[in-house]
Image (cartoon, rainbow, N blue to C red; front, side, top):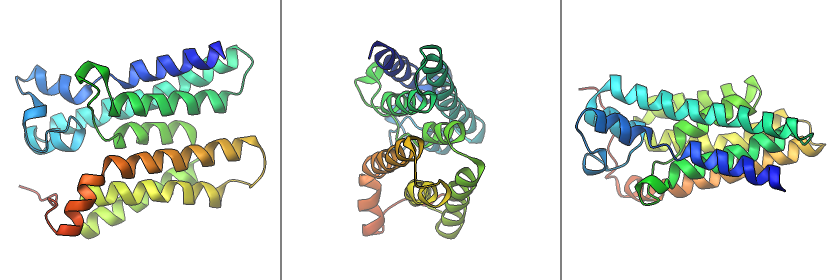
Length: 206
């Protein structure tokens, strides 16, 4: 129990590092007052350009990847399941990103961080399936939000198809995939309303 609590705390603290806010602040910009007012990579990219947007995406993705590996190592050291350790770290990292205590429990939408988590936890077939879904939907619609929602929904479907339907590992990863899918959709609820109303902003090259 103490080990899982440690993994959860470490996951949340690392996940709560507000990369987008810090990168923007380093350039004299309060990203919370610009564009969509979100601290995520997409808003940073739109407001500050590709260089800064890609940097934020990389940082958010990296913290998701590293947290999973760290959680797995802590669990393995305690002779516990490294998969469960990685999953607990992943969930708390995403929650830390979405609800960072540094900014009054307001954060990003967790897509880049979830991307890092997926890279660390799942086999190549699942990663490729989610990435391909995101790419196809984005280039077909030019909506980042719609592509992110579609990618999130494809995750549990891909896990269900790829993994053998037996053993603890399948159920841990499948339930986790449903959880982060639901969280991603929930964080995009305002975007869903705008998509339905036809007022969502498309990603257009300037």
